[in-house]
Length: 551
Image 1 (cartoon, rainbow, N blue to C red):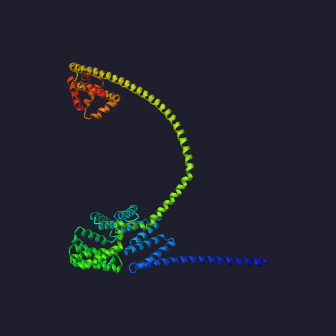
Image 2: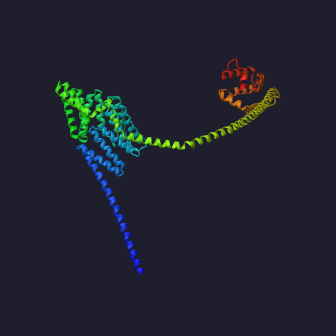
Image 3: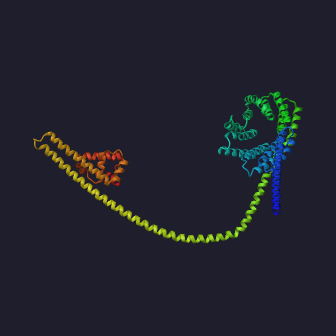
């Protein structure tokens, strides 16, 4: 009976476990489904906002804000930033630049602690464009160049192709062109063409050609500009119809420069119509009305000129009051990014101060210990260095003495060997004299000796004489190697006969002794000495013997 109850209990327990596991799985599946459903709804909201950007921009703004909040709740920073970027564009198209500016700074704040480097550079680029609208040249170029530098570093690291630099060079080009700085605009446009790639274009080539035409128009090259406008017009009509607001306006400017007023008027009106149709580039409409004012004045149509001037004035006041130097603060009011940065820095500073206060006593104690240690080390170091210097001085003196002794011994040995050489040279002289006498006696001697045998004996005596000199030369070089190396290096043009004379001068031999040893006349020795002086380029006041002995 107990066994049956236990079995029943375990069966119920197993059933309970299965039920709990099943409930957990169902709940998990419900959470996952709910999360996926929420993500799908957010994506649909974002896609709907993208569709309504130009048709209903106000509705698009609300939807982008909702998608941004939803992405933040789901901790999807990338898409949250993407929503803000698109929202800033809608605000910009509506000429609500203060809102666009604020949204971009919020996007920058989100990217601050992420690896979204490319997105950050896009934000800097757009901030630069907004500053450009408000004639803040310094700030505009600061952010535009910041964006360019980020992309340059990405190209250097091989993370993006070089063609990715083109949109950033292009943005700086348009800024300089709007500021009427045509030379700088042309330089950056040339850079855009330099990095442009037809296989992987980061921006359509038609945009670059459009800017080329605008710069040509500013340089009064209107006919060239017209040809470019006519060539690229079909592309913009098909691919970028909202951009036709700008296209028609600048095209009209060229005709206005050429005083073709009817064509210019038609294009200006087309630009206004495109702006109304696509809800795009509304900020350009005041400029178009200003150009129409200029056109009607040239036609003497002052009624229409006044009408367009009033419209331009009203629109300019509506969109660009903050271009005035007195209203630059509008661009700084909603700087969330910098406010947050300041707050974080202040918090870090406060924490740092508290740490300093806590560590102050410990640091003071460490300083005292360090000071005592340094003084102690300095005292030890002083005595150690003093002792080391004394030891080093004694060693130097000992080395110097030993060196002097070695030099003295070497000199004595050299002198001894040179004396031996001199003695050897004298022996050679005596031997040569003996040989000469022998030759004389042989020639004058017994007539029965055959002439061939006589010549053989004489040749033997000459060979003997030459080998004796070679032996003397080898011994001289061995003893005076340094002298021989120096004289050969310094005066390579000296002949062997010259070298012999130098060697004998080194042995302090007189001209007479040299003539006897070498078997030449004293005059020949003097001639050789004169030749040596000339080769050595010695002046008359220099003694040849002293000079050779100094080598």
